[in-house]
Amino acid sequence: MGETELFLTIITFNLFFVMFIVAVMIYIRKYKQRKIEYLSEIQLKNEIHQRELLTTQLEIQQATMQQIGRELHDNIGQKLTLASLYTQQLLYENKIAGEIEKIDQVSQIINQSLHDLRSLSKTLTDDNINQKEIVTLIQEEVDNANILKKCNISFEHNFEYLDLDFVHKNVLLRITQEFIQNSFKHSQCENIMITLNTNEENLWEFKIIDDGIGFGIDKILSSGIGLTNMKNRAEIIGAAFNLESHENKGTSIEIKLKKQP
Image (cartoon, rainbow, N blue to C red; front, side):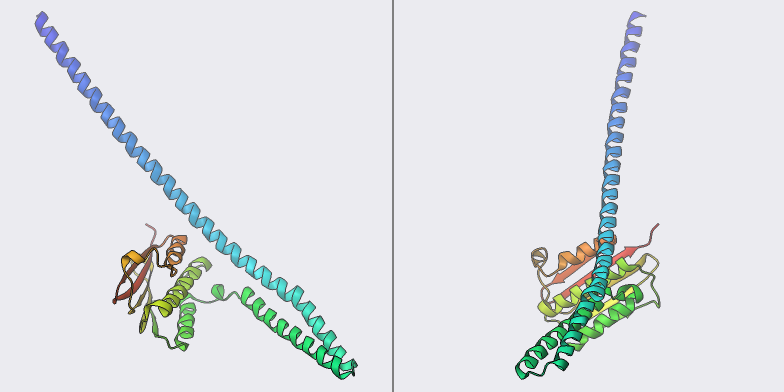
């Protein structure tokens, strides 16, 4: 009987020991899982915060530029206009030939400065991005670039209206400009194809492809031709960014913004 009790005690002890080891392993596994989930949550919050920060910076930049434009127009513009009127009066009143020529030169400089100031002010205060649809903005960029006749640029889309805010439209427009400029400078392409489509999976899918000389994958990060800017802009709005380029086969970018589950 004593041996049986001892045997049962040993078995029970071993059983509890194994259960203890299993419990510890389960606890460690769950702890690691919770730690991974916690770190993922922190990373996600940091990414969201970073996107919100970059979005806010863009909005502040836009507001600042508009304020500067209004100040240039309302303050400095008025002073230059007044100076122009004074020089016109001096020209009318002054009868000395040498002095008239000097005053006229000053008047021309003031008037040219006033013209340049008004153009700058209009550029800064123009709410073009907010007022127009994204397809209109991209098409205008394509039309302007095609005037240069460096290569043929086409733009296609599968919708009539896409509700985008200033930040999203600004990102797509700047990426379009960056890609076209890079292709003009480096790709020796004949054609550039731009598409902006919507589907069941994505709010929108944006692609730009050129048929230029491309470049090796090892040169992408060190190329210095604005690729980092495009990727960073896509990250601002939480869009997936993919770049492909092969020597003598052209370059393409694809940007997708998925629908929220």
